[in-house]
Amino acid sequence: MPENVTTMEVDVDTLAAALDEGAPLVDVREPLEYAEARVPGATLLPLSQLQERVSEIDATRRTYVICRSGHRSAVVCEALASHGYDVVNVAGGTIAWIRAGYPFDQGD
Image (tube, rainbow, N blue to C red; front, side):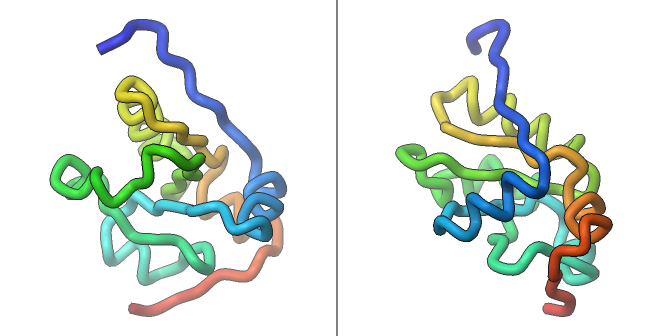
C-alpha cells in the first residue's frame, strides 16, 4: 500500500453542487443508520461489506463518500485512494448535511 496517500475532502455545499452535476455518492454507514437519515440519492455500501462490494464503486469516476460525521468515510477514502480510486470525503458527514438545511430521506 502506498504511503502518504492523501484524499480530498469537501464540505456539504460542494457535495450538493457535485450531486446536482450527477456525481455518485456512497454512504458507508450500516443499514439502520442509513434508514434514519441520508442524503437523497446516496448508495448504501456499508463499511462492513466494503471488501466484498468494492467492485460496485466505479474506479474511473470521482465518487463522494459519506458517513455520519466524516470519520468512517475518511478511513474508506484513504483505503480506496491507495488502490487508485478517485474518492472524496464529505467533511461533517450526514450530520453536517442536515444541519446545513439540505433535504434528507428517511426509511428503508
